[in-house]
Image (cartoon, rainbow, N blue to C red):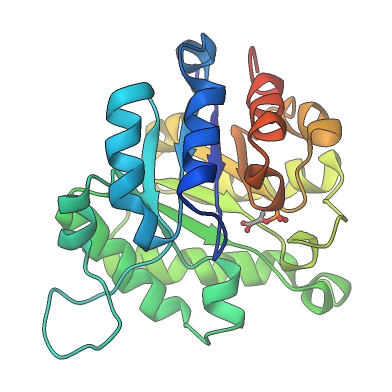
Length: 255
Ligand code: PEP
């Protein structure tokens, strides 16, 4: 079995400023954590250029991610940003289909799949975010929701689409609520996702990193990350506090 390097990824959403970038870099500069954990920073798009400069100075190990991007190359799309633009500013990864994109901005699984393909073609690593709502879980439809979100990508990108990509399982009911999935519920969903990928390619399923997101805090991170199919986390609120984010990274060590 492949030893998967854990990932702890920050999602600052529409928060943060240059000072917070500096604080984060100061907290992580020279840390041994990078040997064991892949640490990802995703700031608002306006801070990426500054973050790129600062990471080059202080923490070149940090992976820089965009929170969202257009599925198109260029043209008359006011307010949109392309994969190529994120590449130019230094991004390595991009989140595709974050719950807020799907549920607040009405982005479909088909559109998310197009973004996923666009990212790969541009040389950005896509992190496909999937997750069910509370209602879907209560009605016993959690796995069918995950299936449809993942199948939308497979249908467009093909059976080997998760090679060189990541998945983040983020139940909508757990994001920003202070109410994380239990380690058992999260593990069950992660195992299901890995199983879907294994049905197409056992090797990819063995190596693909599947992150858990939804109210991860220093207190609950270790119990979640120690589950066999959980390879780290996507962190919102707690990533805005560099010390807390560091503690969450430390909880991923040795998993
Ligand atoms: C997220 O934004 O992806 C997230 C998981 O947020 P939080 O950690 O605040 O629940």
